[in-house]
Image (spheres, rainbow, N blue to C red):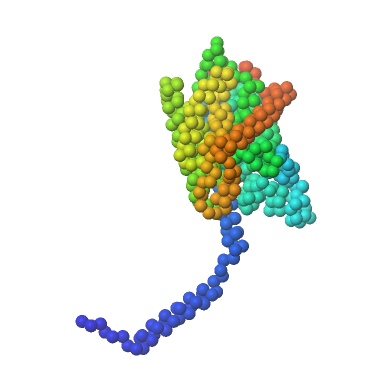
Length: 493
């Protein structure tokens, strides 16, 4: 059956409707504003800022991981003390980095230290807008101060976003010390040392590498080393400070008897395992967040996968090493192997292939086990293995950046890719390894020596070790008047 033909008026009606729609579409298109370049720039800055702050919050959450790891690997009678130290250390770091550390680290200055922008005020004559801030008597108008922090102006996010991201790194360095000196240090002495570490040791050495200083490859610098997210800047510095504290403090009572090592097991391996999982998660902010921009997914994904694969191979490497050397797949060694892989890949994660990242993590896991045995032979008592994880593998990761260097890695186009490409030194792997060694040596000598001086001053002025009676009873009661598990305590019965 043939369809009924349409009438001419009906066709004209539909033609009129189509013309009206076309006209309306044209008018709408003309009235819709085309996004301005400034609007797109603001959007990009906003996205970058959210990325930086979210990853910084992940790094902040690592404080919970450290608290669980350290308290779990120590005795129950010292659990409150460990938790108190891990809690208060970030508070101390915040104030210390705010009032002094940030300016010394990122302020414009010389090859040794930042001199401008201390306390976020003054010394900003190269920033014309700063006069406006002074006129308003408001030194905390953050955007007015970008000019005096040249070393970190490569990212356009607001100043306070930069500050907070760097603050959580500074706090991590201080937290590393807590575990190594656990179960015998006075709480007050540790608190003061944390202030000093974040005010002087951490920012000065950080300025050398990240602040345009003597290891950054700047004109007149002593070395052209690279450390993408802090194997040296954060972990080795914290490790050197911890080593100095362990030496000055001495071992826990009963740890070494008649030339033999007397193991003092931790009281809660559930806590320790959960803590490492939190740290593993936090590292996905630590390393990828160091791009400080959401602008290039390829770079972020590469760094994140490199971080994860190193943690995995670090865990497996420590598992095998512990099984062979200790005859058991010791859980504490597996946990520290995971952390060792994470620490080791922190410096090279943006500069090496995924396969190289896996190898770096595997070696780190083995090194963590060997280092625990080595430090015990030297009678350097480290209850949680912080020296083996952060010092040894901070050094290894920084060195591995040179050994596996792939500065021409293809991260596509974009600001992050261009920034990473700009960090390429153009050196061969051998030459870059030499630069890494220079940096390791210079930072190690400085951080260890200054930390040793601080520890000895504290020992002479305040005393840094609790009494033998208090150590035997537990620092929870002696230092804090609390007990982590009062319903199960037998110390007062």
